[in-house]
Amino acid sequence: MNKINRRKFIEKALLYNGSFFLGGMWFAPTLENLFFQSASDYYLPIQSDNPAIARYEKKCKGCRECITVCKEVQKVYGTYKASKTHHVCIHCGACISRCNYGALSEKYNWENVLETLEDTSKIVIASISPSVPAGIGDYFDMPAGSYLSENIVAACRDIGFDFVLDTNFSADLTIMEEAHELQKRIEGNVNMPQFTSCCPAWVKYLEIFYPSLIKHLSTTKSPISMQGAMIKTYFAEKKGINPASIVHVAITPCTSKKYEITREELTTNGQRSTDFAITTNELALMLKSRNIDLSAKKDNYDQFMGTSSGGGKLFGSTGGVMSAAIRTAHFNMTGKNPSADLLQLNEIQGLNGLKSAKVNIGGSSLNVAVCYEMRNAQILLEQVANGTCSYDFIEVMACKGGCIGGAGQPTSDTSTLEARIRALITADSQAVTRFSHENPEIISIYKDFIGKPGSEISEQYLHTHYTDKSALLEPILAQMEPEPAF
Image 1 (cartoon, rainbow, N blue to C red):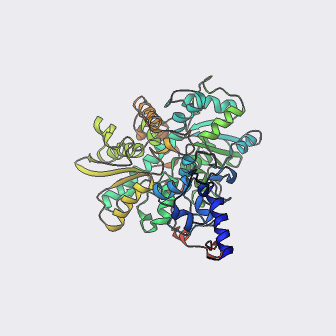
Image 2: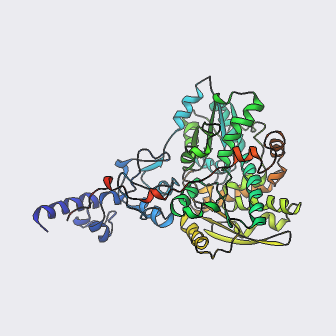
Image 3: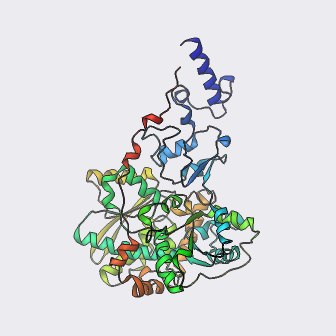
């Protein structure tokens, strides 16, 4: 090692490693990292055009926790050649949840929403996702797992939204289409198993890393994407509103929804179905900026898209999509609602990253699996890829515990996640109807607009397609930083 390179090595070591050479252990990476990693390997190189995640470089302490969770839990980082200008991202926000220093956050849009609310030429509609009512109370000194849907509706009206709708309605709509699709696949033995498709981070992961398995993804849009499509068609027609004047704001626990709403495949009649996606965290910021007390008032959702079943409410919890889908699939295949044990499906509930159950429907056995985090999804993907998978239907979510553990929610430990899950299970058990196919507003929308699951209108507005994104793994050599010369 010559003198110049030796000096550069010491400078880099001190720059990247704080006081390691002075005897300190403050965030000291391993010797392997010290000698062989470039500067960008001390943090995730989030690009400025990332629609979901923002990075604040001055706050970064070089702890590498963001890299650890992305690499070991979500199985993304380390599968490609990264640099400051080339980073593969599924927008799950696991890095945000892991960062203790505020160096990463969702990309904020809440101030843009407040500005839009001041525009009197616009009809601004809020849609509340299932997990938001079970999480936002953490910001207002309420017990963990408080279920505050009516409080959120009242608060959104105080902020200035013209209509407040329930995304659980479109969770029921998703179940109607997904259960119908599952039945068709089972009867035709085509492209089994069927994967759920409501988590955009999971969908993008499969498109990038397992594009040959795209055919296994359900073509049903996520509840938020269905919600936007129905707001700008069915709801606009019912209310006599020009769709061009509507601004749809999805309030969600998920950072990846900020990416999802930009996908061209999810537009409605050439326009975005959802104009903004803001997180639970951002809603709390909006309320606090206007000094609105969440506990002060309660109100109900607006009509036409404001009623949901217990099954729809379960969507926010791991196993919830599967439970709701099995309920309606059972009805579709037998003409009867399931028994109490099938209604609960306890085997697929709770904070176990990979779980399964055998379900009997009309004398036929259905093997189902539920998982969260891509490290668990990868196990099932490999089984499907090599032909050893024994499951018929698989639910996948990117975040621990499902959407209730999303990166757009208040930070949480295991007990908090369990409290949120209990809140959604309780909301399901107390619902007037627990079956998506019995939701009166779902019955009405099929009668008045869609026709039936799988109809031409359904295919146009409620279904989508996916694309092979494996090219994102290819290194962009012209943008690669040279390795440090020691």
